[in-house]
Length: 294
Image (cartoon, rainbow, N blue to C red; front, side):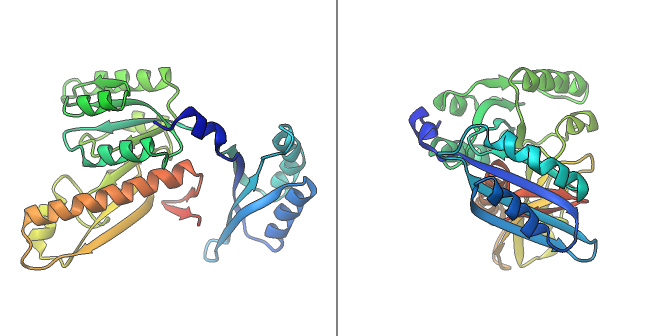
């Protein structure tokens, strides 16, 4: 994992995410309020959904060298404005490292990639536990000195297994669950505990070829592009808000095994991007869509 000295040296920044009904002057009013508080804005991005009349904004500013009371002071001034403009908002600092649980089954390419990126400092999080219904990942967890929990799942024991998983996540104060090729369908009870905080990777360019064998279905259909999708998990299978997708071109010469091999690279890429963007507070969900800020 990232060394304590690297964490201590990381710049502290605040991030404000906003969505509200669109109207004139929103950017100026938020930026002006931050200016009045002496904030040094480092990044700002916004988006308007003209069809729905909605406005979305992400603002990131430096806290280095600023009084530790700056966020409470800012909130005291911001909350009346937010209420007036009907804003939904969230604020956090990038030094607040979310605690993450990784779930996987037998395929280890995605979880190995995430563990490497975390150890290299690319993912600003603390991986609290790896949970699997198989033991293949146990040695990898030991190598990275991360707690491993083997929780087998069968149709008869699904409820008991999920109860055990949820209790463990609560005990470890987990804020984000990443399904790194976890080949089990989560129940509505589980999903409801982590709204917009369970990220899955699906080995298909959704909404095409949902389900467990998309590469076989893609090969049978004779497609010329295959893809992978990272999305937030909802109670509807493979239907949650999409965060990231990528594709690779294939031809009639490629067999199912070729599609699987090339698809694994796509799966690693789209899952790691989605996790990083979530950790950097770059994503807002609305309806069944996402805004992913630059």
